[in-house]
Amino acid sequence: MTAEDDRTLVEQSAEMAANMTEVMETSQKIWAKFLEKQAEDGLPRNPDPLNTFPAWMALGKAMADNPKQVADATLDFWAAQTALWQAATLKWLGARDAEMPELPHRAPAGKRFQHKDWSENALFDYLKESYLLTSGWINHTVHTVGEMDPRERKKAEFYTRNFVEAMNPANFFALNPEVLEATAEQRGANLVRGLKMMLADLERGKGQLLIRQTDMDAFEVGRDMAVSEGAVIFENDILQLIQYAPATEQVHAKPLLFIPPWINKYYVLDLNQKKSMVRWLVGQGHTVFMISWVNPDERQRDETWDSYLTKGAIAAIDAALKETGQKSLNIASYCIGGTLAGTLMAYFGKTKDKRVASATFFTAQLDFSDAGELQVFVDDETIRAVDAEMEKGYLPAQKMAAAFNMLRSNDLIWSYVVNNYLLGKDPFPFDLLYWNADSTSMPAKVHHFYLDHFYDDNDFAEGRLSVLDTPVTLADIRGPVYHVATKEDHIAPADSVYRGARRMTGADVRFVLSGSGHIAGVVNPPAAQKYQFWTNDDLSSDELSRWMAEAEEHPGSWWTDWDAWLAARSGRKVPARQPGAVHGVIEPAPGRYVKVRFDQR
Image 1 (spheres, rainbow, N blue to C red):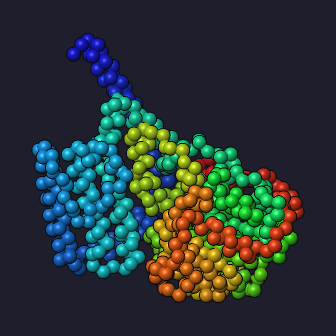
Image 2: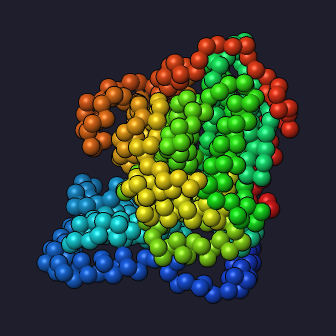
Image 3: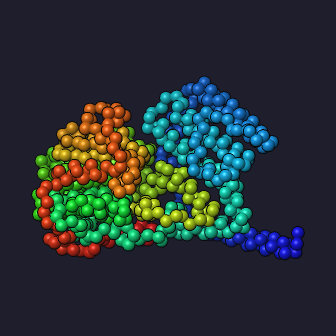
């Protein structure tokens, strides 16, 4: 080794030591910030706020009641581990033809194990395979052992899956070959950058870790997204109403009003010029109005489901009708906005109100008998815990964001923990993830009503719901309905959406199943030529799978099918309307309300 090599080694060692010192200093700041937040909040009033204990008790009883099933599964697991160990030993000894055995219930590897050393290095290959075998066996056992109440089993499965995903060896510094390689090559600079990002995320979350999933400085609402031309023409303390500028000389007489979810911001429907449903509809000759819900705080503490109907949906309908001079309009609704629209349509049907000519629902659940994984967060105990979180009159946005991230923790939590904090890489700029991170708070009484009457008790589908002092059921919905579910939806499962559509026995329902999931299956412009959709006018089958067996598959986006359906219910053509011709213009779109971010308050 030359003197120059010695100097290089000394310099590299010094750089590593300096970086490790900075890692320690930044770690201390992170712990200080975390402990400061804990001290500020005090001890948790409920040690089990998600009410998981009954599910674990039920699982323990199911295992105790079925000792042979558990013993057989355990023996199978250890036999598989033995076969895995033998194959790994041969690989360590240099056997070139040694291959890992086919193992029962092995979980799929997924993209978390893409680095070459997870396959080529005998040690990391064994770590990976042992983890996949163990996690698959645990999940399978929880899913199959004994007899359990379906909701308790679903809750046990959900939290078990979150546990095994947290235990993925890729999440740990010393067990991840990609992180070790980066640390050696960069002499710890990756950890310095990563911990600084963690500290910044803690500060942005005011003591709670808000993991960045994208570059939060790469986008701005009104500059890069929510850019369709238009104006706010009406507002009150819970919404602004946007009217979009026409793109054709003539438009359909009946306007189209969007009732988006308030659990997220509306601009997923106006994400950018290529993906914007708003821009596309305007181009087809529709006069489009959009509700932009307020991002609530203490000022909205007294809002209720009924006030979101009257001051929200009905006020927007009346404003749009006055602006266009029409007696009726079409509505389109998305997710929880669709649940609100369902109760509105049932109320209008019951009271014989004719202001809505047709209703479209995107991934909207109305029958919550089996409402997907979000249902694991809802029972009487968890609702009480959520109520305690809403002492100021609203549920903080980060609470809801955390719940949604848990639904896909591998993709939305742990992959970013590794990328950001261990590898020290900035997250990739992605408009959809920016929108996903632009979380909203929830008015306390509205949120309680939603959890209690829909997710927990399924009152609308079971005929026990009352809105605006009027009992309503799904059978009260009248008129033409276009109902879209998405095949891979984990928030509003297609089976659940289909059940709700079938209960609209008083309406003329066209049910459509789109490919992909809750967002991509809806925001799928025809120009992209992606995915497919299925149609079948016969809703007599009580199972979606039977409906699918007779359905016709169409390539591409369902938007064109919807536009043809909508145009037939939108009246004659009239001269295009400029925003605010009657009400006047309050401010240009997208308005103030959508720009309020919870992490900038």
